[in-house]
Image (cartoon, rainbow, N blue to C red; front, side, top):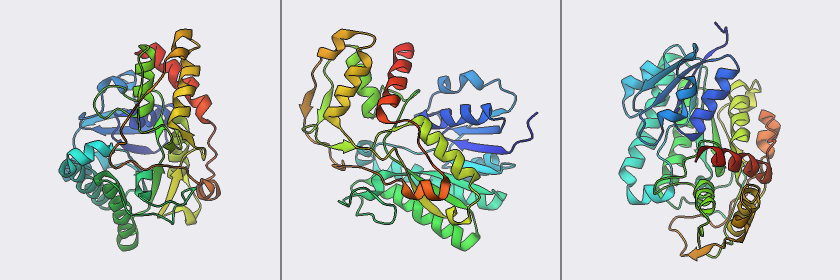
Amino acid sequence: MSSKAHILITGAAGFIGSNLCEHFLAKGYHVVALDNLSTGHLRNIESFQDHTNFKFIEGDIRDLDTCKEAVRGCAYVLHQAALGSVPRSIKDPITSNEVNVSGFLNMLVACKDEGVKRMVYAASSSTYGDSEKMPKVEEVIGKPLSPYAITKYVNELYADVFYKTYGLDTIGLRYFNVFGRRQDPNGAYAAVIPLFTKTLMKKESPVINGDGSFSRDFTYIDNVIEANEKAMLAQNPEASNQIFNVARGERTTLIQLVDKLKNALARFDQDIAQVEPIFGPNRAGDIPHSLASIDKARKLLGYDPEYDINAGLDEATLWYRNNL
């Protein structure tokens, strides 16, 4: 048995959570996985269900007792559980708030009561809201543009209060448009890269919201894994109770994204290169442009993301080709 620490990963059957489970099991950690399977899938964790150091708990972060049970004995918590998607939060703000705010508060209380060394949690670039400053720096945000963005900002405020009031060590990671293996291309709230990939693989036209000029800092999953590990293990006291952008620091428009995806998928089927997108209306709550400064994470965490968007898309499209 490994002598490495026990880690709780919430949202463990989801896209990011399952990748974190796989990574830390490979590193010799004991992993406790918590998920209610509302948006995650057992198939994402089936390959390590029988691993000696892996324990899965099917449960909901909206239940405090479940959170305490999952946290017990863990040195670190990587909190990924949330109801994502801006459109989902606009359609159903109450459930988004229950999961993302009340559930987050339960996790903070559980971590405090069980003496966790550090809780690293998934924050969001949506917190920048209507701020027009580019690139986005952690200390300058605007007003949130969606219920989802509000919930993720409230997480940051709660984490700060728990650090100052109870001494709970927390680090927030503002993810910028994460993509990669195991990201679900199905459902009403599928993210743009898996959705476009699935559509292009069928040689159908992807629908771009707006004129294609909106831009994002697309971030490959392995960069996110690196950020979580470095945040969890950070020894620099200046890193505690901080928020960090997790991105590549590069901006890609949606029309450029379609071209890059076509190029990556044309390796497998040249006809995909001829597929043209369709343009639809802008989507409510969307931020026009998103580009991160990652200087703070470089300085305090040693974050040095390896994958740019082209390398990430090469890996992601290969995975989808083999798994869709």
